[in-house]
Length: 117
Image 1 (tube, rainbow, N blue to C red):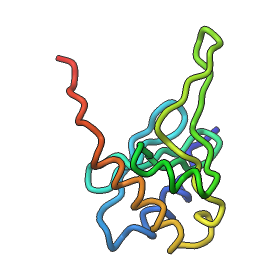
Image 2: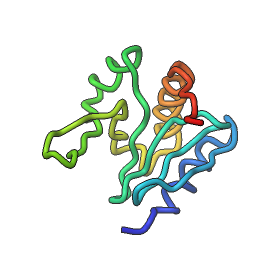
Image 3: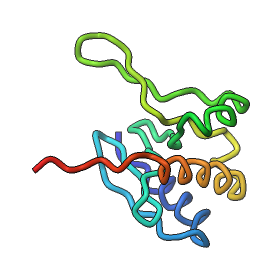
C-alpha cells in the first residue's frame, strides 16, 4: 500500500507549534520524528502508532490502545513499544497533539541507539 502522506501532513499540522515533523520511509510505512526525536510510525495500512514506554503505558492502557505487533519470519508474534492512536486523533487536532506529545516524551526518554560502524 502507498504511504499515507495526508496523515503525515495532518500530524505535522497538529504539531507545528511544537516543532518540525519529518519522516523516513520504512517497510511500506514511515517513522515520524519531531525535531529529530522518534515519536510515531505510520504503517502500510495507514494506521498511526505512537511511541510508548513503561512510564506512559498506563495512559495507553486506560484509552484501550493496542500494542503494535507483527509476525516474525519464524511465525512467532513480536511487539514493539508503539500504541495505536485513539480514533479521535484522525479528526481532532487537539487530541492528536495530546497523544503525539505523549509519544514524543517516550521518544525523548528512550536510550539513544548507536549506529553500527
